[in-house]
Length: 354
Image (cartoon, rainbow, N blue to C red; front, side, top):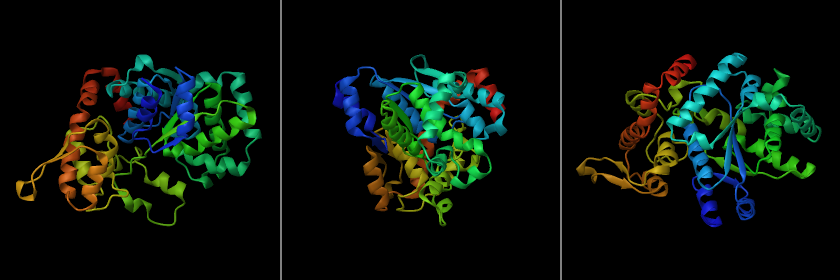
C-alpha cells in the first residue's frame, strides 16, 4: 500500500488529523509506526465507541502497530466503579471480548494495562518532567479529557494528575500515533507541545467524531463552554436510555431509536443521522431506507454526504430514517449478540457490569 493510500484510509471518517502533513511524513519515513488508543474500563461498550474501533482497524490495516492501553489507574482516578480496581480490571477483560466480537484482530493488537506502566520508576520521572513544564491552569483546562468539567478538580486533587499521566503514556510507550475521540484532543495537543520542550517524538493525533446522546440537542441548551457541551453531548453509557450498547437486543435498539431526538430536516446534533453517517455508512454503501411507493419508494444511500443533503432538504422522513437505522444496526450487531450468547465468560462479565 503506497503512502497516499495509507493517508487517505486513515483520514477517512476522522474528524481531525493533527496534522495531515505529519501523518504523510510518518508513513514515508517509517514502515511500521507505533500507535495507541487509551481506553478507560468504565462501563458497558456503547455504540459511540464503535467509531474509534473502526478507525483502529484502519490503522492496523495500513501497518500501524497498535496498542490498546487499558487505562485502569486512569479509571480509578476518574472514580469509575466507585474506584473499585477489581471491577475496573473485570471491565478491561470485558472490553477485550467486545473487540473480538466487533471483528478486531486482537492477536495483532498489543494490550497493556496501566498497572504495568505505573510499576516503573521511569514512568513517574517522565510524569514529573511533564508536570514541571505545565501550569496549573493549563492542566485544569485539560481535565475535560476525563469527561469532567474544569471546576470538578477542586473536589479531588488526583484528577489533576490524570492529564499528565495521559501525556506520559504517549512518551513512555514511544508512540508515533495517538487515536481518540474529539474529547481527547487536549491531551494529544499537550503531548505535542511537551514533545517540543523535551525533544520527544511529536505524535500524530487522530480524532474521531463523538456520537451524540440519543436525547440529542436538548441536552446542550444553556450557557455551556465548548468543552462542557462536549461532555454533556456525547453518548453516555452512564445513562442507558441515552445510548445503545453493542449487545442490545433488536427490540431494545428499536425502542431506543424510536424515542431518539430526530427532528425533520435538522442535521446538527441529530443522533439518528449521526449513527447512519458515522457507523452504518462507514461500512455499508448500500444503506436502504424503505419508504412507501406513494412517497417515492425505497432509497439506496451510497454516501454520508448524500444522506445528509437529502435529510436536510426534507426528502427523508424522520420515521423512515429511524426504522432503517434500527433495522441496519440490529443486523450489523448480530455477530456481537451471537458472540456474547456463546461465550460464557463474556456473558458473565457483561452481567456483572450491568
